[in-house]
Amino acid sequence: MSSGGVVEHFSYIVTVFLMVAGLYVVMARGNLIKKLVGLSVFQTSVYLLYIAPGKLIGGTAPILAPQYTVYSNPLPHVLILTAIVVGVATLALGLAITVRIRETYGTIEEDEIIAADNAVQVAEDVRS
Amino acid sequence: MSLSVHLPALQVVLPLLSAPLAVLLRHGGFAFAIVTAGAWAAFAIAIGLWLQVGESGTISYHIGSWPPPWGIEYRVDRLASFVLLLVSGIAAIVLPYSRASIEREVPRDLHYLYYAMFGLCLTGLLGIVITGDAFNIFVFLEISSLSTYVLIAMGRDRRALAAAYRYLIMGSIGATFIVIGIGFLYLTTGTLNLVDMAERLRAVESSRPVLAALAFITVGVSLKLALFPLHQWLPNAYTYAPSAVTAFLAATATKVSVYVLIRFWYSVFGESLIFEKLPLPQILLLLSLAAMFVASFTAIFQDNLKRLFAYSSVGQIGYITLGMSFDSVNGLNAAILHLFNHGITKAAIFLLIGGMVLGLAKAGAVPPAPTFDRLAGLAKRMPLTCFGIVIAGLSLIGVPGTAGFVSKWYLILAALEKGQFWIVGAILLSSLLAIAYVWRFVEVAYFKPAPEGTTRQEAPLSMLIPAWILVIGTIWFGLDTSFTVGTATEAAQQLVKVGR
Image 1 (cartoon, rainbow over the protein chains, first blue to last red):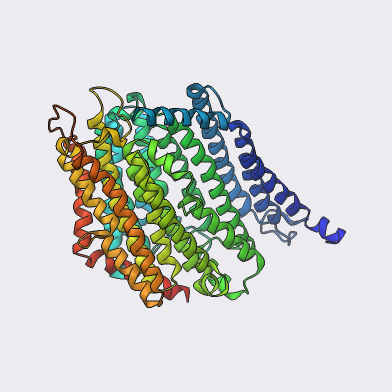
Image 2 (image 1 turned 135 degrees about the vertical axis):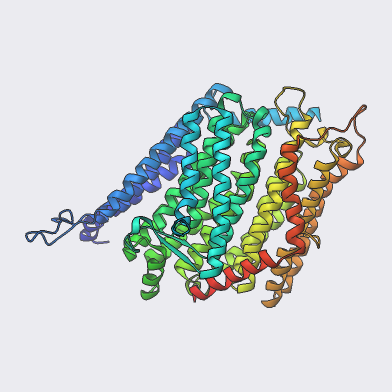
């Protein structure tokens, strides 16, 4: 890619970097809070994917007036407002469940939770 | 009448209104009444819409009278009306059942929230089906998903929390993939209306963003519909969720995701892209076969009855996607049929298991997990419950006279039509695996000696009746197929005609 391409596609490059970084954190980290942080970054990158192409440099809001001819598309912003609400709700719910997991399991590390579940499973198997 | 014009909006709005009202009332009984009323109204409206579609064809409803593609369009065609019937019908049956079931499975002070979440989940699922707007699909998907996570986390076992968390992560990744896909489509076509989008996509060559959109949407939806090997969230979620929730989800949530996949593949991207230019049918065929065999095989070795049938669900979803992979009217017909038939069959099974665990519990205690060691000789104690599970189990296997047979019959017809006899063999072989896991239950419940002093003690009637309505439904739709096959065939023909 030429240097012009990098500048031209700057917003896409940032978007994809955030997307992949977020998804990586979700998969690679065992801490439930860190996973949620990764998920949040992943979801946020999508906001950028929608919003960046909606902006035309020098464009204004679509108001019909003789002095304006270049308009930015406002629809992506509206869509992403909804997506932000969804993202916040997901994060809040995820954190709430994490709190409950901390209360009942006493840990928020995924491998320790799995180990605790397996111990219960083994106990059930022995009993049967 | 003017009201009948607004049925598509009311379909979603009534259950949506019932949820906040349930929260405001803060009382289990009132919340139950209002959400159940909302679900029944939704079911009545779904019947009305089904009749309307039969009379006058596809309904297009413009929200706020803004014409598409600018405004949001609600679009009810044959397939949508069929899935709406399934979702609202199952909700109308599961809600009355919930009352007795969650009495012990969910702490009492959370009951009103349970009903509120149920109402929201129903709203989301109905909304996904009825909307004709791509971004709307995502929003409704998240409404149903978020409430589903809460419903699963309400299970008394602490593993329900871990299962809900895992589903939240996987489900959110899936939903985000879907938004990314929709974003690419929007950037390419400049529209969010599905019909408009399909027209514009047909006009342009399939460019790389379109293919990327297809990939993102397919993977995202596959996560939500638990296509093998993306089903990892499903077994634990189904096992530890409250029984009524498991029954509702097993019958509707994954089925609605299948609907979304059919909608995007056939109505938006079009068959020529999916089936002729890309190796998608081959990939789907392989994954479906893997689901049919691996998941069904895993089911045989489960000790928890709920988990056994959860794995069976993954296997049965394999049949649905197998039908889709054939790229023919018959194949799609079989997929839509199995979507419906498996929905009512699995709901019946999980409802009966809910009654069973309640009967296993000591007075006033939290119901235990339905593991096989607790089920010895259960048929003596709960003959109706066990007999119901056996009938529904026969439908899972595909025995003639049950609903499961009808959909497998059409699946085999579709395979024969393609001349692929080995797939027919695979379908029959995987049915043998279903016999194995259903037999495990029959053996323990009917042939193991019951503990000393067992008396007959069925689940309460308020749970037994809804479950048996569905059990009778599995027989009814196995004998009289005019409604199911008629609707599914019409839906399949409509979709294939649109796609060409």
